Amino acid sequence: MTTNFVKHSGFRPTFGHYVCYIRSSPNMWHKMNDSRVTCVEEEAVLSQEAYILLYAKQGIPWFSTAIEVQKPCADPRVSGFSPKS
Image 1: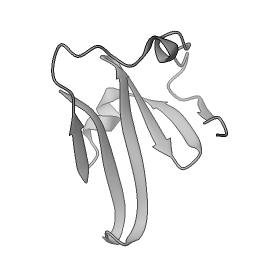
Image 2: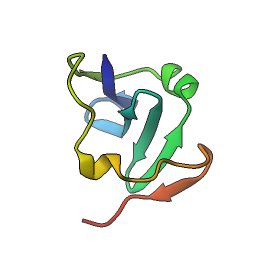
Image 3: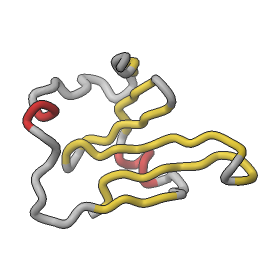
Image 4: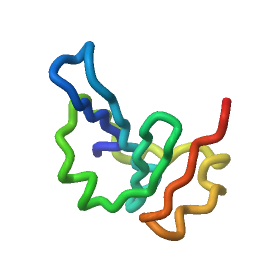
C-alpha cells in the first residue's frame, strides 16, 4: 500500500521544489510543503505525478500512538503550520 510519496516540480532533480504527501490513516492525507502542512482529499493526491513512492507492508500498524491521539483536520481546506523542531 502506498503510504507516502514525493512530488518534484522543476526541470532537474537538482533544481526545483519537493513536496511530500503523507497518508496518516487509511482515509487521511497530508501535504507537507516546507513548513506548511495541509489536509488534502484523496482525489487531489491521486492527481499528482509522483517522483518517489514509499510503501508499507499490509498488516503493519499505522504510526505510533503519540500520533494517533492527534486530532484530525476538521476541514480539508484549512491549513496550518508544522511545529518548530
